[in-house]
Length: 105
Image (cartoon, rainbow, N blue to C red; front, side, top):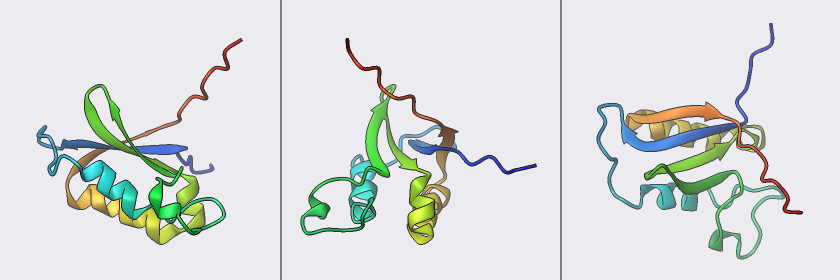
């Protein structure tokens, strides 16, 4: 049986004991560190935007970072850094697949 690999992993800013993770800008900091890891590799100025593989967001009022599974294929150590960050800080992690946005007619 093949192992199912999630398309995206959601690192949530809630610890396993239900408390909000601090500092409040943790998601932006984590995504900022991951900014060089992007399709085609780092380019001049790429540090000024988030990688499409590691995006901070807010879901239902909870800060999250969405880490795309393509990061694991491109740079396994960067993927491990994100997953270990979540583990070391006892953050809730969920696996999911983002649905593509509908095109407006």
